[in-house]
Structure formats: C-alpha cells, structure tokens
Image (cartoon, rainbow, N blue to C red):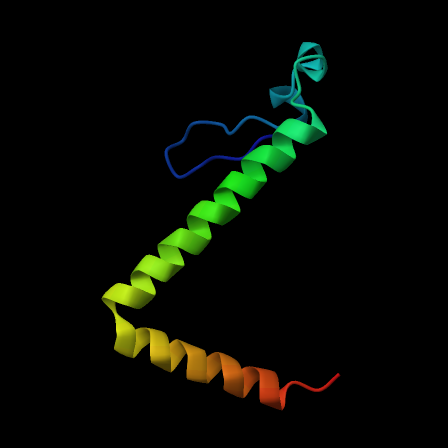
Length: 74
C-alpha cells in the first residue's frame, strides 16, 4: 500500500520497484568497491580544498573533533 508524497500521486512500493530481471545486471562487488574508493578519494580532496580555502573554519573543526575524541568514553 503506497502513500502519497504531498502531490497526491501514490508512491510506488519498494517491492514493486525492484524488477526480478535486474538481478543479473547488478554490479559486482569489485565495481561497487571501485566506485566507493573513487567517491572517498573525491570526498577527501573536497575536504582538503575546503580546508585550504577556509583555514579558520578548518581549525575550528579540528579543535571540535579533538575535543570530541578527548571526551569520548570507551
């Protein structure tokens, strides 16, 4: 039973969206890991760029992170 998304259109159920014929065309684990590694590299690069462009904000973020790590209890 699908709900509505504020527009009055019924939302498709999760079960009905997945086509059984797509199981053969699913990506392999190696492809998924490759795309994930690429994403993480780009995310790291974006963070480094932000840190260079906004050094004050980066310093504050480092200090907040250090405080969180010091106050965390195992």
